[in-house]
Length: 280
Image 1 (tube, rainbow, N blue to C red):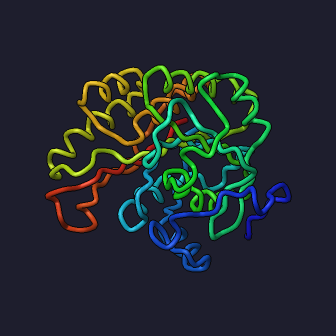
Image 2: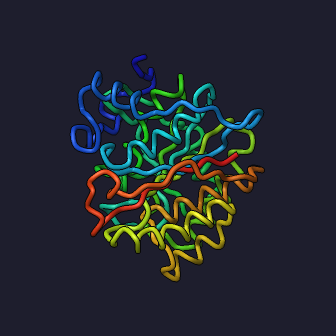
C-alpha cells in the first residue's frame, strides 16, 4: 500500500535522507528488498510483542538481523509506534521529539502522533519538540520501511536522545511507561552494538549487552554501558525502552538474532555488531 497522511503538509514533513545509501531509494526496489529481508515467523502463542530492539545500519550489513525481528510482527497491529534512537550527527541535551507533522520514506508518509507528543512533553521536562537529531539522522529512518511493510497503519512518535545520561534514559523510560499505559503501542529501540573491534573482541563486548537484554535488566545494562564493559551507539535508547516496557508490564525479552558486519563482508579485523530482540 502507499502510505499517505491527510495531516501531513508538504513543508512540515521530514524527508528521507539516507535513501539510496543505507537502503534503496526506488520504492519498488525498496519494497522488494524489505520483503526479501523480512523473515515471517510467528511470535509466541498468545503473546503480543510490546517492544523490539533492532539495528540501524545499512541494509546490506544489518538488514537480515532487522528483518528477523520485524518478521515477528506479522499479524499484529498498533495504534502508535514509538522509535527511540541515538543522535549520531548532533549533540544536545535531553530528548528531541520531531516537531513536524510526519516522516517520509520512499514508500510514503507516516503521520506523527501529535497528541502523544504533547502528552510526553507535558509529562517530562527532558523532552522537547525540535528538529535536533532529526535533520539528517538515520537511526529512526532506517526502521520505517520495515514498519511500513509489516504493519497496515500506525502513527509515529520519533524520539532521539542526545546526551545519553542515566538520568535522561531512565527519565524517558519512566515517562513513556506512564503515558503509554492506555495506548496500543509498539516501542522500538534503535541501536547497533560495538564498533570497529576485531570480531572476537566485538563478540565479547556484545555478549554483555545481549545477556543484560535477555535478563530484561535495564539497570545492569546502564551500568555496563557506563563502565565500558559493553558498547552500543543506541545503548541509552535501549535502556529507556526496557525501562518503559517494564513499567507497562512486559516481563520477557527474547534474543532473535545477532551478527557482525564481518558475517557479510568477510573482513573480521574491524566489525560492527547487530542485535535483534523482542519484548513481550
